[in-house]
Image 1 (cartoon, rainbow, N blue to C red):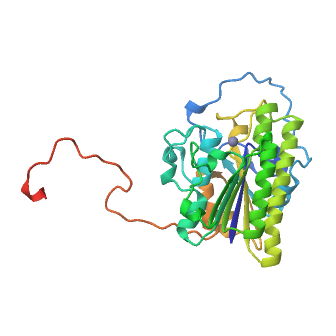
Image 2: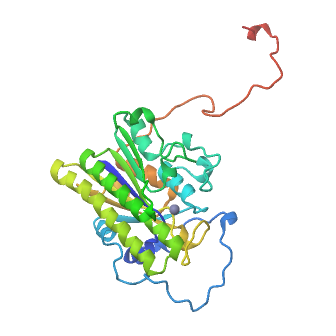
Image 3: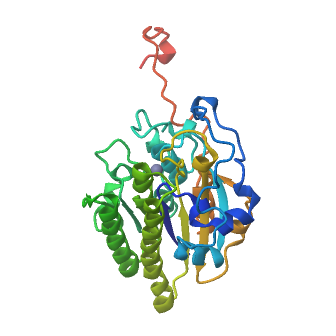
Length: 340
Ligand SMILES: [Zn+2]
């Protein structure tokens, strides 16, 4: 089974899939507390504040996501603050916690991503014949010259196209034009080359919420535009199922929601609430994807990898692997047994 993971930046799932969120109490309250360092500043909220638009309505902002959900499953995912994009995607894509990958902000300063391979690289490590592809509107996720990257470059595999990376360059219409560029390239590669594992990241909803908040028509339009991008990507792999009989697992997630006025980073429920939508084209969902009631961000990649057949290898060493220890500047002992 091949894997297509679609990352939609900054999606409020309570607006994109309101029926799904209302029907699953796992979406109501975070399943683990936030570190108080990342708590939101107290805000005066009117006691009679109207329900946020979208909640409880039947309007379909995301018809493709709704169709994928109806034929698949949506698992609540709770992000661990800080809910910035860097820590969020680093955790979602590498299956590690903030403490393990040391990504706390979007600057990635001091990150340990080299020892926390992304899920595409894990597919490659499991079978060096694997072909992988990533495309993104946020270059930091893939650019070797940027502050990350989260997706490893693996230049040896880029020779000959075994590992392909694409970062958007057309921001003439902000993230909308960049997303369209990513969508077009990704749909082509998915449709014609069918990589074994792919990650496609789109950022329109995040940009709209930062500019206009997450309650107005601009954000709803951005959700619908991203949903249309998703439709193109699903169409690309669905044709491979129809024509070639290929089995595909399509997954969709987000790195955070958005406050009503726009913005994220702290511990509000509407910001921490994410989701993992899984939909198999070519058969029923694997049993492992039907099990978890809720997930945390670092549990997403391992679950998807297990579903597509990746079994992590192991090194059973009698020393602490990867730990740097310097020899003390005290000189040798002159014990002849140790002199060489
Ligand atoms: Zn983000």
